[in-house]
Length: 543
Image (cartoon, rainbow, N blue to C red; front, side, top):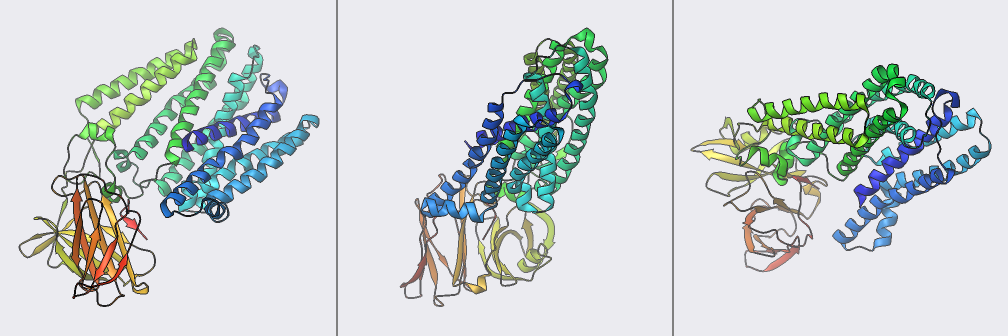
């Protein structure tokens, strides 16, 4: 539902920006188009309605997770979360936009039209305030995402309106349109590329490695689809413009329609991506997330580290790249013919997927296994080598399998973490992609801090079981806790407390209910306290 609302919002903003920009351009500089005022009012009104759906979704998730009253949570999300604050700004700008457009219907001066265009741009920018990039870098993330969004919607919105709402048949008018729109499209492409690269440094710093995950593959597909759109622009601006009178307006419009539909596909991919967490550190993400089904289909069964990815061509990738190149040539031919926009879209889509499969088929997982090659003499030395900005103190060492031992430690008496190490005689080796960490309030300021991680991939998995549950905790109070009992839906176990710390590792062939009460026992087997957490940590870092 949220993805659908995001796609519709992108389409509505594109439509509004296209209408606003085309109204500023003098009528004698392009083809006439007909857009009913009721459609513009409807678009403006729908945007606040659609943008409230992610707020309802977030409120519902918190309501279910914490079993808290729905309306107070929604009020808190509205007032305290960026997504809610952005909605209030969006609603206010929608009201102002409707008022100004109502005046524009009667006062059709250039300056009123220009003010409406600027207002719609600000209106569109308000949606970037709650974006992934803005949540990671409030200033630069907002600027980069805003520029990216405006460039895309101005470009695609103008094409969408002029291709679907114009019945103009004058080749002179269309030639004039191409003349002024080509520089706008080129500027939009430049801004899109630059802002996109800057956004990737914030959202997906490990771009190539992210291809093992669905988010990265969607981003790659989105980038591949840009190629046909750029191809459309080159053909329109440099080839068809000179022979428009031979090609005919109808065929030319077909190619514009195809370009606008491909743009809608890109908006759809972007909408799906907004509901997925970007993988900032792919190796850590892979501890709790399986590689995508598509990537597993390419690599098959693989034991050991998947990233970093390496490139090497093979017969499959060569065939796929050759096929995509032939489709690209066919696409140029179809655009020049302009016989039907459905055929152009079909060829563009086939090209994009063949190119995607070719690129994925050319990548291979790291040849590195779970065990790192660097040798250490003590567990603390191995752990400290990965912690440059903090002092490590080892609290508990516990063997969890024939190959690995788990080492629980704290960093500066603040964060609690655990790593796996491989022990060979008296030497220790780090195990890649095994770190789990609890941050937030320092452990020395709390009576106890306990978290359970659910692991679906990586070296923590045991006995070919698909799920491993790793519970680590630090207990300051009560001070006489000797052991803890942990009660899951499918099993229970006990863990000894040493240095106020414990670890418990248990595997299962099924995913258990998140509720798992924990009881504290003293050395007389008496219950002296307890803890209840109603959910499992899905990531490798939590608070």
